[in-house]
Amino acid sequence: MLAGMSSPILTRRELLRGGAVLLGLPFVPSFGPRHRPRPARFRADPFALGVASGDPRHDGVVLWTRLCPQPLAPDGGMAAEAVEVGWELATDDGMRQVVAKGTVAALPELAHAVHVELDGLAPERHYWYRFRAGDAVSPIGRTRTFPVPAAMPARLRFAFASCQHWEQGLYTAYADMARQDPDFVVHLGDYIYEYAGTDGLVRKHIGGKLTELADYRLRHAQYRSDPLLHGMHAQCPWFVTWDDHEVENNYADAASERAGVSPEAFLRQRAAAYRAYYEAMPLRRASLPQGPAMRLYRQASFGRLAELFVLDTRQYRTDQPNGDGRRPLNAAARDPRNTLLGSEQKRWLWERLAASPATWNVLAQQVIMGLLSYPPPKAKAGEPEDPARRYSMDQWPGYAHERAELLRFLAERKIANPIVLTGDVHANFVLDLRVDDAVASEPIVATEFVGTSISSGGDGSDAAKELAALQPHNPGLRHLDRHRGYVLCEVDAQEWRSDYRIVDVVTRPGGTTTCAASFTVRAGRPGVVA
Ligand code: FE
Ligand code: CA
Image (tube, rainbow, N blue to C red; front, side, top):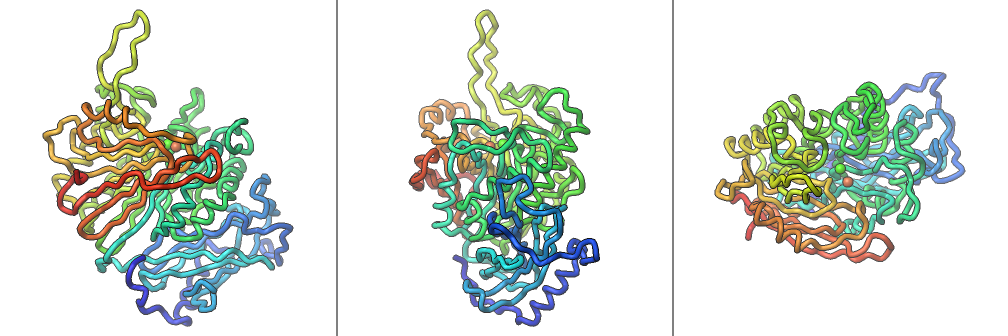
C-alpha cells in the first residue's frame, strides 16, 4: 500500500457541503410530481450486482451501484420508476466516521444505475462507502484517492486485465487479484461478449446475440452478478475501457463486421451498447453517452510517478485494411489515411504526452502495438505460395503509418519511459517496440506488456515452441504464454516490474494462480532488462 495515510482530511462539515454541491448536478433530477420516488421495497437484494468505484483523482472518485434485484431477469426485477438511493462515505471500514452523504435518483432511463461523482476528498487515502434503497443496504466498498499531482509517490501497485468470456471460464484470476490487493485495476476491454448463449460450455449466456439495449443491459448484469468480479470492483477503484466485444466483434467506428448492416443500423446498435456500458461502469459524467458517441479516452495522474492515458481504439478507427485477419504489411496496411485513434484523440494524446511531467507514461489500450509477424499460411493445392509474413489487420500493424508516427513522436520528443498496456489477444506477450520492429539495430522506444484473458479461451497452455518459432522474425518479442490470468505491475521512480500471474485451470473451480514470469524496465533505459 502507498504511504501517506496520515494526510489531513477535510472536516465532516466541509465534506457534507461538498456533497450538497454534488447533489446540485444537473444529472440528478429534482423530484417533480412525475418523478417522485416512493419508499422502495424489494423482493430480493437490490444490490445483487455489488458496488464499484472508478476514475480516481487526488481529490475525488466515482461511486457506483445499480439497483438490480433479479440480475437474470429482463428488467433486472425493477419497475419503470425512479427510486431514491442514499449513499455514505466514511474514513473507516465500519462506516462509523461518515464524512459525506447524500441521495441520488436511480432512474429507469439508466437501468437504475447511480454514479456519484465526489470531489473535495483528501489525497492518497482509503475511503469506504455504501448505498441504501428502502430498507436494503449495500455491501461496503473500499476506494482510494490518488496522490496530489505535484507529489512523487514512493510506489504504485496496480493490476490490469481483459477478456472475460462468461461461458469459457471462471473468474478465478480475480480471487488472486483480490489477495494481491492492488491500488487500482485497469480493465482493457472485452468486459462482456455479445455472442448468443451456447450449450456445453462452463456457463451459458442468457439470450441471443446482442443488438438491443435490453439485451446489452441483461448481459452486463449477468456478468456482474459474479461475486469474484463484483467483489474485485468493491475492493478498489477501476479504470475501464472497452475493446470490440462490448458492442460487436472487430467493429470499426460505424462499420459492422456483418455484411449488409448499414452504418445507420450499426450506430443504433452501438448507441445501445455504449449506454449499457456507461450504466454498468463507475465512469464520470464526462463519459455519459450522447447517442452513439461516448467519450471514454481520458487521463489520470498518479502524482509525478505515472501518467495513465486510457485510450479508445474502436470508436474512431477507420475500417480494417485487407479485412480483419492476418495479411501481409502491404500498401493498404501502410496507407497514411488509416487511423486507430481518430484525429481528435490523436491530437489530445500528442499534446498530453508532450506536457506530461511523469516518470512513466502509460498507454492503457486494446490491441497489440508491436509489428508482430507470423508465418504465411500453407498455400492451398494448386495455388502459388505467398512467402510474405502476416500481420494482424485488426491491431496496430493494420494502421502501420499511425503506429510509426506515434513511436517516432515518443522517440523524438523524448517522452519519458513509455509503457504500453494491451489486452485483446488472450495471451501474454512482452514486446520491446521500435519505430520499425523488424529492424533489430533500431533503438528501442517503449515496452509493451500484453496481458492475457481472465477467462476467454478456457484453460490455456504454455507456448514455448511458438515463441521459439516467432522470435527469429520478431527481434522485440521477449515472452509468450497462453494461460489465463492477469498482470500485476509494481512501479517506482527507478523501475517498472510486470508480474505475469497465470491460472492453471478456469473451466472448473479450484484453479491455482502463480507468478509465471516477471519483466523489469529501468527508468531511462528503454527495453526490458535481459
Ligand atoms: Fe477478447
Ligand atoms: Ca477483442
